[in-house]
Length: 120
Image 1 (tube, helix red, strand yellow):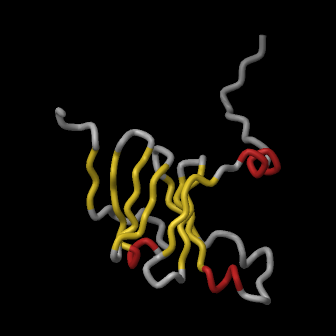
Image 2 (image 1 turned 45 degrees about the horizontal axis):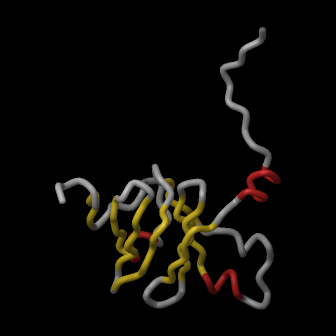
């Protein structure tokens, strides 16, 4: 019996085939689009790059993404915040101004609470 400790990566084609988008939300000025997916990410797209008549496949790719622990099934822009709800019942928000900055560090949440944390 042969055992291996390394993880096998799914092929890019397979990931594309099974990729699912759960929710979409536009920034307050409608210049950015956020999309949550089944890989527990919030992906950000700069719409002017994606929708330009001279846009290439490369420029239509996501600008950057935030890796989360659980998939986001609810997302809405409220004032200057992107409010999200994940699969565990957590509700959290990001400030759009911080969200669109490309950084190695994940943006901080404005608030974060569990819907099911307290007693009903």
